[in-house]
Length: 150
Image (tube, one colour):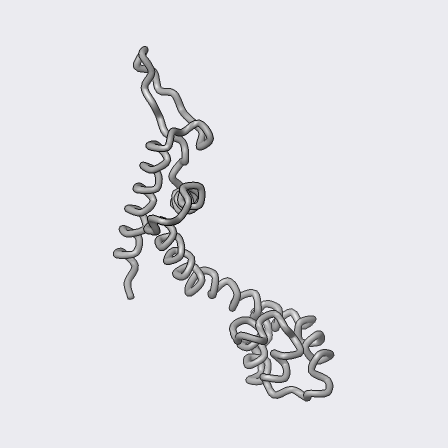
């Protein structure tokens, strides 16, 4: 287990990972955390060299990605899939992203005359098949959205 952060280091990590205007900007995050205005850039560099501070930044970023940013991403994909004005190519990419993240293959099986299965890649799909993928993606998002507790 790494060293514990001081309260000022915690403030630095918070600003560095989640405060608009300071995200990824060490000097600004240091200033907002109460470090010296004059030496903020150097202090930020020193802080980010400390393994326990780097670990805290990494953890905060992972939490944001798996939490609030994941929720925003799902909402955006849902918005794209529901937008009747969105170009089909954009909707297909959104559907592919949803299906890919869900572990669902983005190829479909089609029966030929011999009743054998033939797999088609995305580039081989017809408009109707692509629209079906979009519908499936929308259904998946709706199911996922309703199964996530508030």
